[in-house]
Length: 206
Image 1 (cartoon, rainbow, N blue to C red):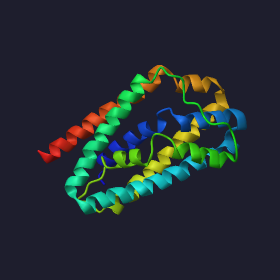
Image 2: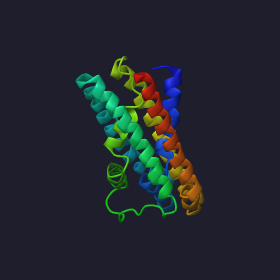
Image 3: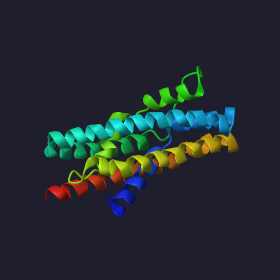
C-alpha cells in the first residue's frame, strides 16, 4: 500500500470514527458518570466490534475479488454511493437531537459492544468503506496488514477522546460534539469522499 493511499484511507477513517453517533454518545456519557479510567471498558467493547467487523470486511472483499473483478468494481461503486447517501442523511438529520441510548444494564463492556454492533455503521458499512481502498492487483492480506492496525489505532484515539471529553467537561461535551454545524461538516466530508472515490473508480475503468 503506497503512502498516498494510506494517507487517503487514514483521513477517511478519522472522519468515519469521529462522526457523532451512538458510540460517541455512549463514551461521553460513560466519561461523565464513571470517570475516564473505568469508562475504558466501553472503549474496549467498541474495539471488539471494530475488530470483528474489520475482519469480516476483509473476508468479504477477498471473496468479491476472488469471485469476480467486475463484481468487486460494482461493490466499489455501491460503496461510494453509500458514503454519499450517509453524508446526505447526516446533513438532513444534523438538527435532530443526538441518538437515545438504551437504559444502562449489565457491564460497561457488554453494553458498549451491543450499542456498537447495532450502530448504523454496520458490517455492510465497513465493507462499503473498505472496498474503496483495496487494490485487487495487490495481495489482500498484505494491504490489510496496514489498513487494520491503522483503523484500530484511529478508532482507539477517537473513542478515548470522546470519553475524555465526557470526563473532563461533562454535559458541555454533548453540546460541542452534537453541534449542528459539526455534524454537517462531517456529513459533507462523507459526500465529498464518496464523489471523489466514485470518480476515481470511473477513471480506472475508462
